[in-house]
Length: 457
Ligand code: PEP
Ligand code: CO
Image 1 (cartoon, rainbow, N blue to C red):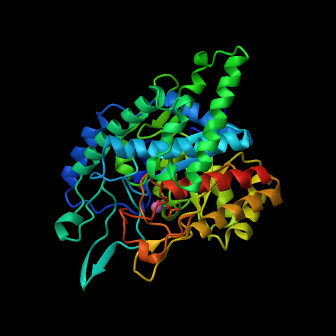
Image 2: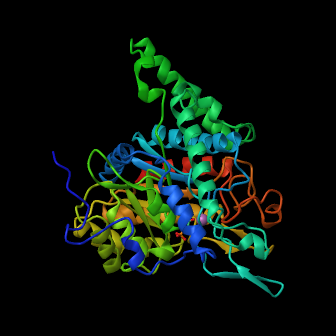
Image 3: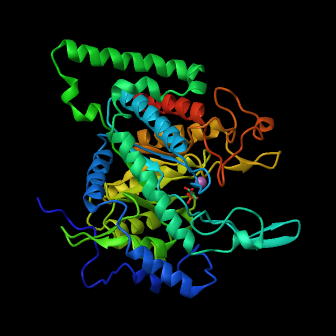
């Protein structure tokens, strides 16, 4: 069956550069234009990080989510770091994603589509262009793709060469993710090994061990029935797709390539990319860039988005109404979600747009604790997810997935959770470069809670 095209009509000209004719929010002020152009030229000659066929496969998988036959888990760092770059850190993030996915799949009985905020999540939008400390004003930190986090004029200067380093780190990260997920690490018979030491001794960890034991029993049962699970690749490998916010458009343009098979354009910096809350202007450069790439794409939806705006956005990004092409990631805050989401669900459903609805329970629930640290409370995160489920139940739509910021490590960045982290604890291991992330225990706990909510809905 021929695929319908999500592209605008041919008369509506698009090219990987056409975003340059629009206003682009949140772009770095590159100080050296010649260096910037030369860097993009170099990058545009580099191999793609992903292949068009993979992005098409992800669109299909997300189509299953749009239809209510699968669940989306999109998770990873707020901002990846050039410094915290090691096999260990990649493996720990993978472990927690695999753990959460297995909890969801086993408890709910539908496949979990696993997408990492990984291998490219290096650029950050900021609410202010500058930061002032003790009367000194400097450009804001915009992620390691652009500048450095240290508070000095030299560190905050945007350096185009960072884009090459981001590309290389993405390539190395993706390589390891592929090796882990296809080379045996994601084998269901190793489900126990994804439980980390510091998690295993906790109540969530023990609950996970029980579930892992049940999976072991199920595998043995299959064997006893004569099913040779060794020959079923799905039990031994996992697809973990990559994603990031496509913020710095020069970088994304340089990695956008025409697929030789179909002639379509794909942003080959990741399997899927999303537009952030601060760059989703309908007439803006990001919308222009995104409408022409054929990857599955996401768009954040904050509390101020009207139903009309969301419908226009669906038309712009998915005029062909291809299931799986568009994921709307709502992030309204725990108090606003149920009432804020319901009219959007109704409008999008009535208009016949087959979107994936994902809940980002992180970005609408950030506040500064008395200690001065930016944090989120586990209860508010859970409350936003519960409100998201409630809205879907009321409207008869499928709560497609969750989009969370986490790390596999034992950090202390979000308050609450089963270990009940308090403001005083935040200083123990507060390591994020940007937003506070759930730690390994909180993430696993969240997966169990989400599974319970899903089963009840
Ligand atoms: C993010 O996902 O890290 C982010 C900045 O989100 P938002 O655009 O929703 O604020
Ligand atoms: Co964030």
